[in-house]
Length: 196
Image 1 (cartoon, rainbow, N blue to C red):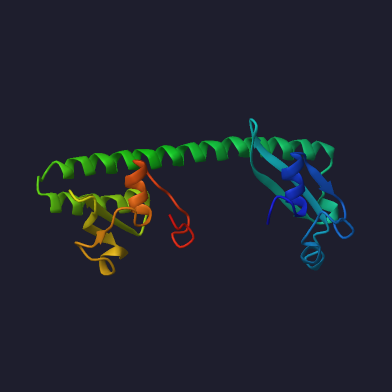
Image 2 (tube, helix red, strand yellow):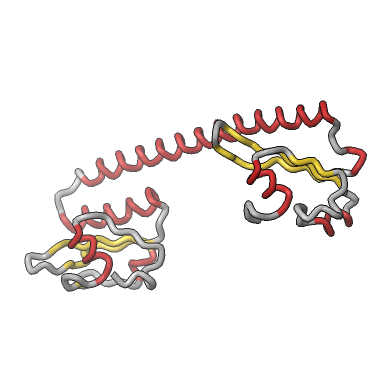
């Protein structure tokens, strides 16, 4: 559900609590049929905000008699504030854990790469190492030849069964050649749409 629809979307857009006693005539509520079928005719929603960042929306689908009174509405808003702190802390912890894992994997890669001076072995270690670090399914390494062509020297993941070692790309051929020509990393969401 997008931010443009439903009671939760209204709360997210306006960053204000929303309390609806009867959802049946209220066009902001999308799941009215479900609510009626379950006897949950009231709706309460409060934004979960940390600083200027909207982290989410806490919603309650309630029986009419359970719709919070004014004091309970303040309590629900306070609860959402505490939830924001908990969500923010959990995200920070997850981010810290991810960064620590990446740093450990990079350190391990650095150790592995210095264990050998054989180009093929080092290339194989490089492509195998990037799979877990970046969470990708396939990786390849091509080296520039003196004639400017790019030769595949290692593949990992699902690329191994498809691409062959020694495959050569001509200068200016595909995204890999674009990265070489521009001297920078090149990214695309769809290799079939990006004709570079």
